[in-house]
Image (cartoon, rainbow, N blue to C red):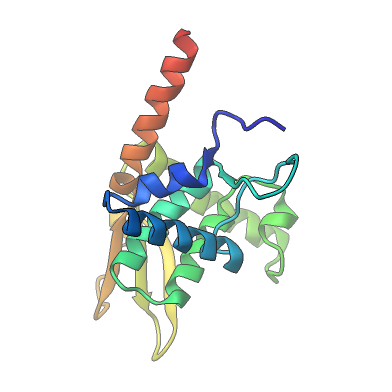
Length: 187
């Protein structure tokens, strides 16, 4: 199967998140992404390959997840937060309903309502239509909530909140992809 123009190699994903030209930094970033694949945080596109080896490719959705998880790890957030953020991105991934929510015990109508709200916020962040944030806050003594929100959904009475502006974080990648697609169509 030939790679589609909307997928990126592991090397390209590394170049998007590692801005340090040092070969050791690039190697560490590549190893981090490979570890995330092994742990199930990120998922390459399934494709048939010939011969030996694994040629991992990532679609746009996974690239945006990689960019976000890298931002979180750079601020030293724990593995549990990365896992929850990854799950949140998986919840808005366009795929068959049962595959997207595997293992969840939410009723179908509730899943659909939740997915529509999350999906709308995610699409607005990707399109740059309005500021959409990844909000991370402690909800109890040890429980952490990771969710999408906009300025109207900012927690007013929380002691501390980690806020990642997804709209701003996504724009360099989304803009680069739009430019690439335009150049391809001009040929």
